[in-house]
Image (tube, rainbow, N blue to C red; front, side, top):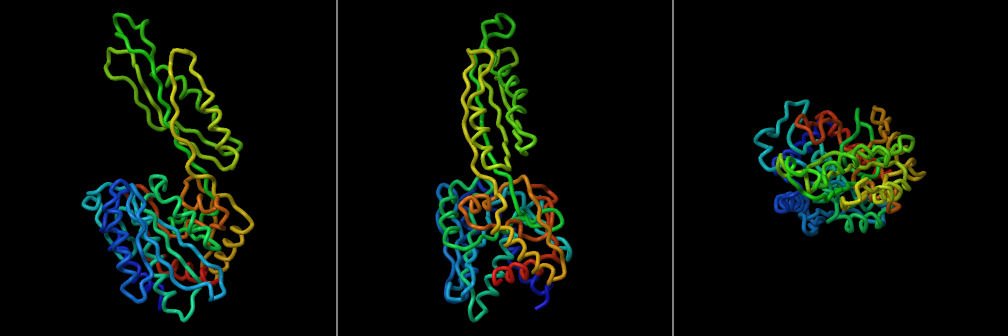
Amino acid sequence: MSFMEEADRVLADLRELVTRESPSDDADRVTAVAEWIRERLNRRQPPVARTVPCPPRGHALLATVGSDEAGRPSTLLVGHIDTVWPVGTLEEIPFSNDGAVVRGPGVFDMKAGAAIALRVLDRLRERPTSPRVTLLLAPDEEVGSEASKALLIEQAKKHDRVLVLEPSAKGGAAKVARKGTGLYRIRFKGVSSHAGLDPEKGVSALQALAEFVLYAPRFANVEAGTTVTPTVASAGTKTNVVPESAEVILDCRVWTPSEPERVDRDLRAWRPKDPRVGVEIEGGFDRPPLAETEASRSLFASAQRIARDLGFELRGERVGGASDGNLTAAAGVPTLDGLGPMGDGAHARHEHVLVTDLGLRVELLERLILA
């Protein structure tokens, strides 16, 4: 079967996935996508798929084909079915395919990767023997995977390696390393007063917030690649009131496994100049770095050799964003990320994938599983 014929098979599933909206905060819609995939995979006998509740989020999809008797390494395919797009986005950005580019909410991040995985499972089921391969599609990756984390790590430890179908990096590159991520909410508590009559009786939470934001770059470490970035802030209630409360959210990213502890310690040790201001810190690091290891480099080298056989060069990139691959790598399972198709616009309105890459990625993924 040609790459374009394979692409047509992938596109049929991709349409079904994209036209079923599944924002992370709508458990019922996410579950509906998981149920559709379960039914789709179980049309052929024997059934291989089931859904797993991940409260308070939706259901995860879990499917297994093949067996360990095939004598090859077992593989966990990882992805997610939730998206960042609210319900109704499909009316603004409908699913479309002009023959070269496919568009729609969640198409790049990462329903195209899920559709490729479905086609690969189909192909493996057609073989007389296949190594054991499990597909896990989480319902909450875009919001931290808290509800599905235990299931993910449990499944990862049952397999020899993990292949993540998240979007590829620029130019179709695989993601060989990812930064660890943390999110903090810093709350400041002051004392309100009339801004005109007696401002001196107040204690400004906003002023403490400003002091903290200006200090925040000191929590970073340029040489280690650690970033600490204030992203969202709010303060005050009325224009004539000294702000009693304020808060800011920090986005933290690290390459080095030891940095989360250091950043957390430094953040919690900070104190405002005015001792009357109360400070509360909520949150922390939820995903450790996906660091390169000898085993993960070997896995990437295998993918590169297969790509060359298929006629293209597969590059590897280190990226700042995190995924569930961070968790499987931290669990000690060799992990290769970013095996989804070429495209662009993750979390953006120009999100799209290239039709010509879909069939090629099916072939790459199947061969890598069988290697």
